[in-house]
Image (cartoon, rainbow, N blue to C red; front, side, top):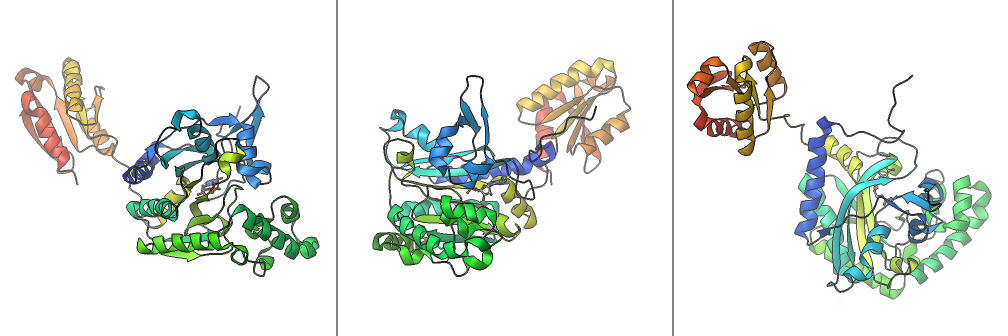
Length: 423
Ligand code: AMP
């Protein structure tokens, strides 16, 4: 029988990649928390209805991309394709309704979409995101965008381009939708199958088409359909961004894949990602979402960023950290008699904060040292019969290839100072 492989579009994150992953996720947590965002975790499996109503049944995500199945209780459930609907559901229940507004929340975790796997597109992928719920003010839109911007800055990814747009109010969008339909209807016969469908289900997504770009160029612009209020709101957001020193590109053709956005919409682009997959992430304002879920109406804005794509960008810019050494020290016994003593030494070193692997194998010492070197350890700590008798250990510096005998009582300090000088 062939070995069992991972499902298509689903990847293992192997230990060698874990340093870069931890760096990315920890940095996002740190930057989000520096802006006052608290962590929230919601379930990975949700009622299908949450996304049908929250994301919109006319969207590609809901129409074609969800992993949906009937559970043993006969209920339709879905592996979450995005995070915002769940977060809004979670916080607008009575549990948090006494808390100060706005609620600032951040999350990270796996999401699932049944897309065609390619570079930067997987069926299971990881998003980091924030949501700011309960108030509608241009400075909050700017705050959310700035948090994402500072995150990229903290990672050292420099070539990020911020694209912003206003999708207007619900009424503006309805007017714009009519204008798009009026423009595209006469072209119907020339449209791809997806766009024919979008024309009746979700005309805004016509601007996202990867095949019919030639029609997009002459399509009506949302800006010509914005109300005065939305226009002022957008101008205020842009002013706040400028004051924060954040460069943005206003792009009237930027639409987002999910239905619930209104007013501010934005994306972070990076040149290392090709064509339609060039967004590291994006977000926008979703003031109508809570109502779609039959929850008390509260405005909100947030973003979601794709960790896999950010790692591609980080590697392209050479800022992703290299894999860490597996451990700081290997504790090596020579001869059976020293096995318990070396295990005890390892415990002491771990208590001192070091990462230690024990080697009590019967291999020759030179082999054990070679193995220690390959693990990337800076120190070898060796106990044989002589050291047992003298209550000492040999500390070997693997990079300088020097060694010294150290009394057991001073061992932790000696290894710590050696590891601390690691280059
Ligand atoms: P969205 O929720 O569609 O706005 O996606 C936000 C970000 O999540 C995108 O810009 C990507 O970085 C990432 N993302 C979305 N879908 C996928 C996927 N299938 N594979 C990898 N990353 C994805």
